[in-house]
Length: 345
Picture 1 (cartoon, rainbow, N blue to C red):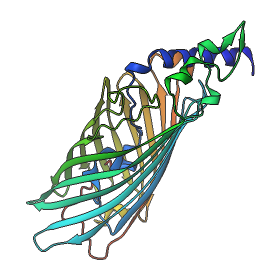
Picture 2 (picture 1 turned 90 degrees about the horizontal axis):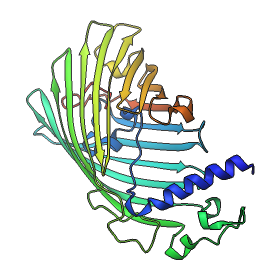
Picture 3 (picture 1 turned 90 degrees about the vertical axis):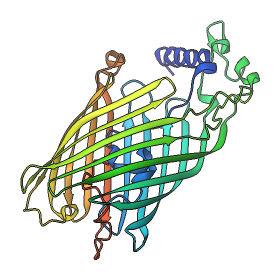
């Protein structure tokens, strides 16, 4: 291991260790947040036009600065029951695994979702609940601490930090909830959502002797998405996502242009189309997304250009995403009365 890499690891570990009592863990995020809808809001479970939906997403970032941070996720959901009053019950599952940095800090989370959708006029209101299990782990042998430096030589495993009770893993449960309102007309549709995640505020600290106040803070989200049909071929999909957790706030805004290669037959999820989007994450990155839709399949890519204070170190390189989603058609179009064509969510 060269001297530069040792110094980099040493400085990073020192900064993290010094700030440990005040640091709160934060949830994952995606540029293509529509490709992981149940991560954004449990009320989006079953909010699509079709029989069933499944997808996956892969994200890698900060490869130009350190060992890449890699996040992989997969989801599936479907409507279960439609009652005579215009209500529908839907269920889904969301899993993801996040691996970060030199210490291989990993977070595996599995969530089960239920949402009830009620038709109201030309729209619907949805209420969703989510619960699951998370496991976090770290490889302490790959971290370096200041007091392991003896006469300029690192002596792994001798740090006083170990005596504080740093563990290799921690397990905990999560509870999330959300509501969403959707509606519109033939050429204009909207969705508005509010969500609360980590309601039980679990203790996810690897420092076993820390107080229970060091853990996973609640994450509050707000979403607004529009679908504006300009003509038979072009649809505009502006969207806004707001998230806040502890002292961190994230706002993403932008627009996706969706162009149908053939005339829209009225069941747009299964038409052939290409899309291109431009997005801005305040104080952090400028993002571009693009891809293709055909026969219920959506393939998307995303790239973040970093504009934060890390720009000098990252040379602008932020994150890269690859996502895939499939919606199976329903012969009854059962979700049509309550769905939101704005698939940005």
